[in-house]
Amino acid sequence: MNKDQFIKYLIDNNIQYNEEMLNQLDIYASFLLEYNSHTNLTAIRNIEDVYLKHFLDSILLIKNWNFNSSAKVLDIGTGAGFPGIILKIFRPDLDITLLDSNNKKIAFLNELIGKLNLQNICVINDRAENFIIKNREVFDYVTSRAVSNLNLLSELSIPFVKIGGYFIPMKGNYECELKESLNAINVLGGELIETIDYQLPIENSNRSIIVIKKNKATDQCYPRLYDKIKKKPL
Ligand code: SAM
Image 1 (cartoon, rainbow, N blue to C red):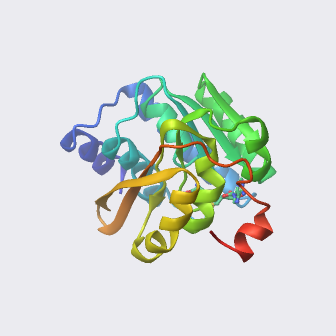
Image 2 (image 1 turned 45 degrees about the vertical axis):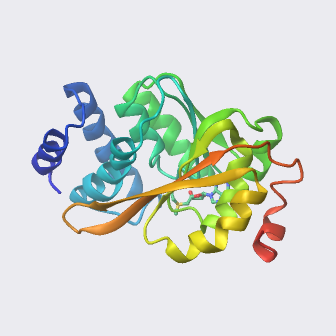
């Protein structure tokens, strides 16, 4: 998807943008590709794929989900900033925390945030299982893209969500993993509300947002240690 096609998509789909946001995307794309030539951040290596598979894919989260104004959002396993940085560019009112355990990606994000002059965004180099200790039930929304299967991801993510808030992971084809995660979602205090299905344009591949509402506090014993979650999923 070239930049003209990208802008046309925003206009045709009534996605609000301005020149500053487009400039920020230009800077993001160039810096990502340049950095990726010496440090492995993403398998995507050309600008058209960056616009389609990273930028537009992340924007589709905002198009399909209405974040309350000024909400606190955690992006778990943000990698090179997807969807978290794109959320911040298109919804500057949101208070965003980007979490990743990989320090190379965190170094990239810190430099990027300076270049884009983003405010009210924080970058944390930690594992979700550790970061939870001081951040239990403090986020209105937790999101995540391409981190792990939904069962494991639910145990890492739902403990961060405030009661009444939402865990909204982005997924490709999800039917099997959703079935296998229903018990975990319930045990962790969540409730599956709906799945929102749509397609990534041009390649027409399936995408979804799984909407999980947190109704009850999560028992303090979750999340368990990573090895335990993997060996004995809920
Ligand atoms: N969300 C980004 C995207 O869609 O492009 C990155 C996806 S990448 C495949 C998965 C990321 O999750 C990696 O950067 C990895 O370091 C991070 N990650 C995996 N497990 C994690 C954990 N337990 N806590 C924090 N980050 C984690």
